[in-house]
Amino acid sequence: MYCKNCGKQLSDDAKFCHSCGSSVETPVTEQVAPTPTETAQPVCTCQCSQTPVQEIKKKNNVCCLVGFILSFVSYLFLFNELCLFSLAGLIVSIIGLVQAKKRNENWRGFGLAGIIIGGVAVLIGFVIFCVGCVVGFALALDALATV
Image 1 (cartoon, rainbow, N blue to C red):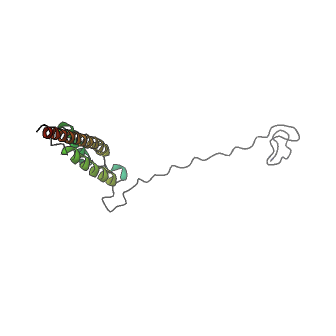
Image 2 (image 1 turned 30 degrees about the vertical axis):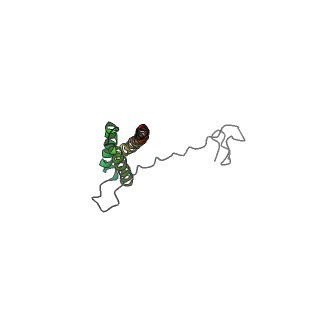
Image 3 (image 1 turned 90 degrees about the vertical axis):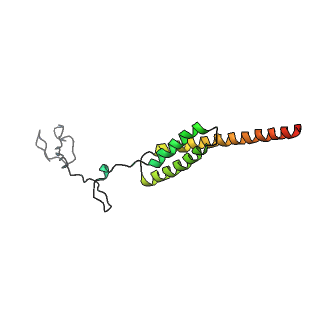
């Protein structure tokens, strides 16, 4: 490499000329932009119709929705013998949530809400049943004591 000002020979890593002191411009290498490559779309690896993965829509898990509805309806029947809706809603919601997780389906939120609502309803029904038994037993003892 030579100085453009005075023409003296310079080392390749020099930044200034030792003879005249002028700044040495290092040649800028032109960077080549990478050529765009085509991106392959992910394809389903199963032996189905070979549709791209992003076009496959998730199915909705109906068990989750049914369990949620049963759990929700159970609050209408808390104070009579039909409070088994809460237990049925709890069981169906658990089954639906397990299925939805295994199959990667939608409506898992309904299953979780059905479990929570059904569980609370089962607890409330159990407490009402226990209180009823205690009150009934106390009334029976009172009736026996007055005889």
